[in-house]
Length: 388
Image 1 (cartoon, rainbow, N blue to C red):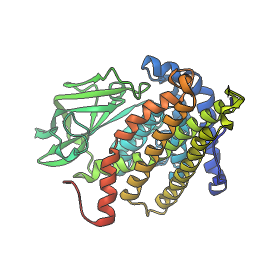
Image 2 (image 1 turned 120 degrees about the vertical axis):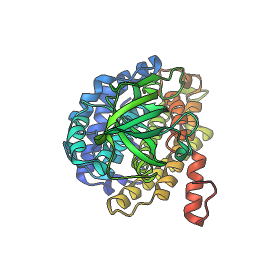
Image 3 (image 1 turned 180 degrees about the vertical axis):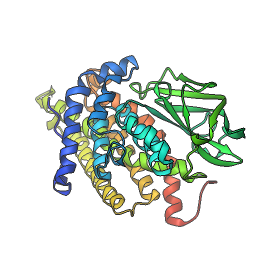
């Protein structure tokens, strides 16, 4: 059945004509180019690389950045792009999110003019793929504990260390690696062809299977002086990138929830048991109404968050609240949708099981649910509950 996006409170009226046009363009892309094949890619554990040039042509890579071949769209437009892409699959949204928010954004915000000219136009077109090297095998929720180091050597730097759970790692041409230089966290643009750099894919995933996830190993990788991002030092650099990416995740989770609701509603109206379609039974209606309620609240959170970001009034705690809420409700909605579909829900003929498994990763990465709880807790009390 054709996709029917839930809009129970007529939120359509809150978006500009341009924002609706961008959203509808991506919605059509997902319906025509992603949905027909994404189930097979997920089952096979492959990413649809053929879509990358299409993302570039449509201006979806670095969409909210200005200049250097980027579209210069509003933050809300970027959020809606993420919403529609994740309606297709979390792995698709993750690819665009990493490229746009975790690699292109820091180059745009903190890079030299030479770095911007070298990388951003090519990345916006999809001809150069980037990855973001922050998380390490022993340091996820506490990134400041990283062991990866950089030391000065002659007219450049030498990087050593390991990064893990890195989206796009083995397919990237450039890795933005965060390392400690004289004890201070700095960002380095590392060509993946550099001697001593290697990327090994992580296999055996039952979540985000249509996404490339890798471990990066840097063994005395030499970089010239112009590889360092000159505009930022300390944890403010990587954390500001994560805020950009989490903003998109908040919208993306809503897209996954909308996909699951739409599938569950359509199935329940057609699946007849006993004397009527199961949508006519009270217990199923309760599940569907809970989905409508939670999706609508999450949509409103996203809309308000976008307007605050456009006014430069959005705080990291507010992003954490939305990430925490929206991924959690999407996770629960995917499970309820799977329940409504019964045994059919565990087959790849339907999408809710795929979303259900993908959202376990989204629930964990870029700040776990519990860590975001503590971030908001500190924001409202002024008292940190963990070391920072």
